[in-house]
Image (cartoon, one colour):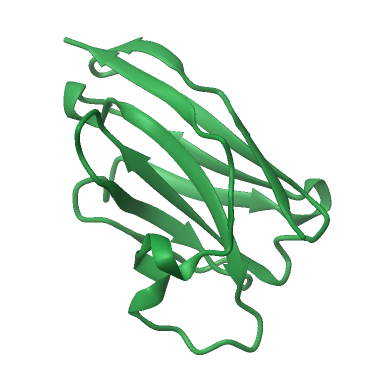
Length: 128
């Protein structure tokens, strides 16, 4: 079992930055992939980016070049650094985890259904 707790959300002006954290207990990100998803009001939860057990990262086109995912295996924590924030980035951001070490990489890594464990979410609001 993996428990995930996000933190770091808040209100920021357009062009500003925030760093979200996702702390895990029960397992470690040294063998799990961590995905970040977001859900805006009235919309579906969508993929933002992920970091694999190896440290490789993948991003949605909408955030590529602005967002960076990193992790600290010793702290069992994954980070989402968000720069150049836009009002359209406003959403609840969720951290998720799935088995990764030894798994085949597939499109499931980009879908909510591909992840076994979820955090409670943290609100990010970007004002114009």
